[in-house]
Image 1: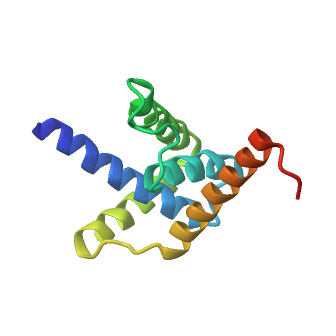
Image 2 (image 1 turned 90 degrees about the vertical axis):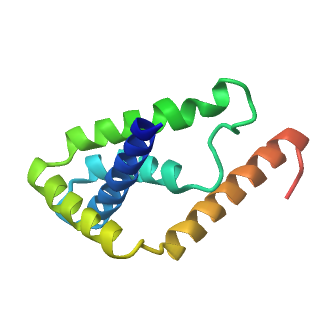
Image 3 (image 1 turned 135 degrees about the vertical axis):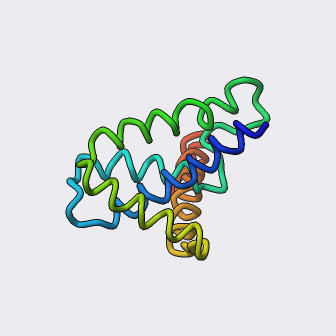
Length: 126
């Protein structure tokens, strides 16, 4: 159980470091795209695949997010990643970040996706 808590804490720190990398102008765009996806999935209050679906519900938590994080870490220049990891460690130890703008954007994205799916399912006209 202790090992699992350590893995989760490391994933939180890495996700915050990736969020900081997304804000860093020196990080190339091709590295920011998977970083935004990984951070969005990690911090999203809504799962990509709902957890109540057996086995498939945890795939996004167990496979997709770590794979996106690993890909992003390889794409970001090492010195920039290390700098943002240090900033993330400082932020985690001093105060947890509050990202209201990101939360609102994620919720709006999920509302738009849900609306689009409902339109397609029920063939509703505008």
